[in-house]
Length: 245
Ligand code: PGA
Image 1 (cartoon, rainbow, N blue to C red):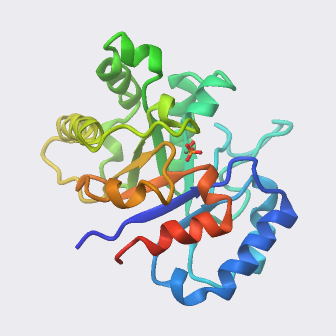
Image 2: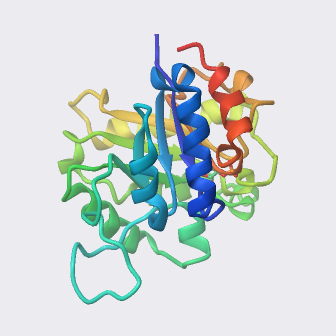
């Protein structure tokens, strides 16, 4: 039976006090959280405090990283700056708000892969692209940064339609299944001849307690990348309670 991963992208919702409060509540409910696959993504400035307070076996990740590993890059954060398990690259907020191109995201992916941290690459179409029937082209182009030398690494592709993020508009299971199947087939042709056991597929975009049970019916989903609902402890707990494993 598959074991679903819950990746909690706290974005910039929680400050240090809020992050520690969350961890205190998590620690107080140890039995629920400790046997689950959970990755918490605090903001960079709160990772140290979160790690210091954690008393439950969950993983910690970075929401983004620099393309460089070290040097004169004011205000930026290297993948090597703190010991973590996972790093998100290519989130649509980075692509849209911070104008990160596929080339920049490709360099960030290389930076993550130069460490022993597992990358989560976010992909997905905007509403305009969907309406113009460009979804598959967008996905092809966003996946084109994956090269053959990645095949031995743990890699997660998070399919997050931009129109579903923070909007409450969750696609139907049929739509998600169709898109994840498409992505899986693209990966199969990119990595032909190897099995895809170390590649996971996540769905993200307005996941919360009201829809997670239904979304779990999509068998291709290995995990969820959750934004706002993951930064509220009670909502997060209700989502985790829905997982059978
Ligand atoms: P959301 O965000 O759950 O708030 O829609 C998801 C994401 O941006 O990863």
